[in-house]
Image (cartoon, rainbow over all chains, first blue to last red; front, top):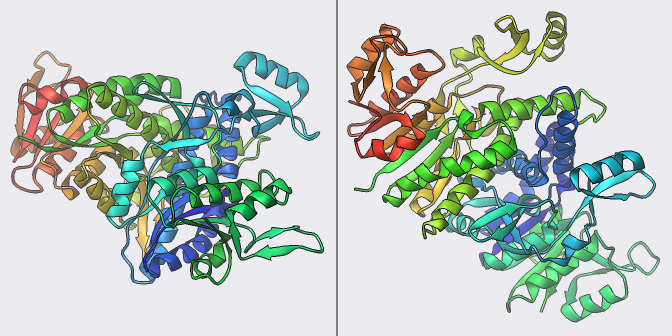
Length: 311
Length: 311
């Protein structure tokens, strides 16, 4: 049976340099194309942590140097990262498809994700971005630019931005039109360019939308059958790393809630993945979320591995 | 009558900083939306000279600094510029459409333009990009990175890349699918990310594809009725800037050839625009190209101004 699948790929899987990325996307493309070859419709979302960090750092370094290039706001850096990552990713998938005799078109859509300007996250920015500074430098930056900055685990001061929840995908009509036209669509890169709506205007805000939550929202919007959240491990575990570690083949919503309250899933790591999976799985009967590794994605859809989360 | 129109917008019209760009796209959006409101289908191509120059300079400055960010190849800088420009442009057009009660979706497609690796332009790179260096610095860069560099009008040494002719648009199916789905599509930004085809692979090459030639090729591919090439002046002139200057309402292909041979159009300025217009106008009976200013685009389509080039 043909399923519509949103795959959420981690930004760490894409490497830290263009040379690395160009190599890594070749590996990424194979399991993605396996899914397409099985007859599934695939929409690809991806993270951009290391990439937007690098772009932001480069733009900010150059703007403070003799080069005198302009300061680049964080949402614009996100838009750049979508172009940079999408270009490599779409080519690798296109090539893998052609190598297997498939002509499916692949497209990268510059995608904005709408957040609520009243989201409480804006009052408590927690997501560190960019370079480390001394306390003195940080104080100057905070007063000059109005940035929020915090001391980061003894390594110095760093800018923090909010991580609000996604409420809509601005380019959803485009994504749906391309799915209908049999495209593999690359979208909500880095969780999407974060924007708030003011009347008819979309305004970029310095924020990082969790890419798993953005992918979950996207999967709802495009009415996907599956959300696959890719991670470094094949399955979700309780008592992870302990002697009584237990890998899980399936998780009900009740079990998810129980394990979350017992603190089994690490914040900023497995926790948001489980939460994003739950959100999608409970959004409509029949929707299923799978957490597994890139290599096991196709096996997971066939029920052979991964952790399935469903109502 | 409803026409399909490819509009080629100059990169200079987008400003040099994100703050400037965000203002300028608002002005750009109005005449574009005028065309859409008249019932035309609009595909928007744009230049990226100042923007990709800025990104390339920032990435190269940061990679040579303590920040130690990776060196960014020129095609990747182009992909970034498409994201950066498309993000602002699509939002401005979307807002202007909504202000006039129209819900037409607007999308930016990361777009590669295929060039021939045997294009003679690769043997004679002429397009300067990036920073100026001393002769000594340039010699080190040329030997270390294999770049072509030339002395630029007494201002120092600069890298030069080839300006090959576009032969195809890799994402043409995507662009056509979105036009069919009633989208305003932003594509071939900066003339497209330049790639060569090697078997099933598309490989980025350091080059700058003239955005008017790329727009002309795009207009052929999407079977447009009109190609509008926007420039700083309302019409094309012969004897430009001289006492016998004459503004032209219409140009036949014969007249174009005659005036080109007489040297009326400046290379790197009006000449490629006239050549790109001729290429489209002669590609199929009924196709017309218009050279005019952004503000006069809608009047031009109605035959009130601009310079019309047709077979």
